[in-house]
Amino acid sequence: MVGILPVSLFLIPLYLSVHGFGFRSGFLSERELFIRDVMSSILSKLPFDMERAESDIPKDLLLLMLKEYELFVDSFQFARKNFKDNAENSALAQTMGFESNKEYNEIMFLREITHTINMFNDMGDIMRLYSKNPETATTRLANLLSMVSEEESESV
Image 1 (cartoon, rainbow, N blue to C red):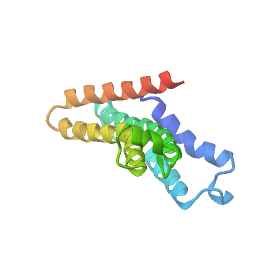
Image 2: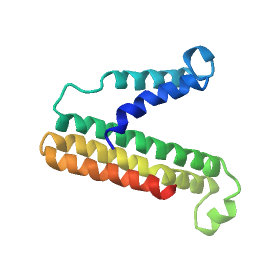
Image 3: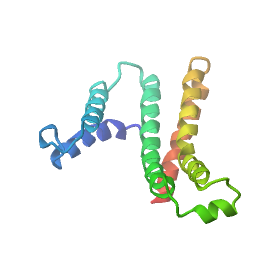
Image 4: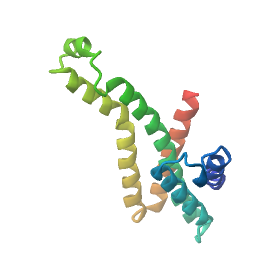
């Protein structure tokens, strides 16, 4: 899994430039250009100047962030479409005992993105744990990465 990180980071900017989304094309927003630049900067730092076992930690953490980001984007788009200022759920909200349709939409929106909030909390715990117990932190990180990878394969 870690072996695909350098290839992925290389291919993202390459794909964007080949398909007409390069800097000169004018199709990328300022944020998208910044994302491309950050990804290129990360790629330029690979391989890290560390022992392999130690360098796997930041690579796995980055992979976990990217995989979770991918899941977040899907959830965020779904939540925006279905629960942002959606008046169609009023009857359902009332039946379920919500005080208002707005409250229902807010709770349902948050429910859709909670996995990302929880994952970022888990990543923070792993980073704090690493200084005390690197082996346990490494195992937890591998388990989370495996879990996110399994979720993606199940959704396909």
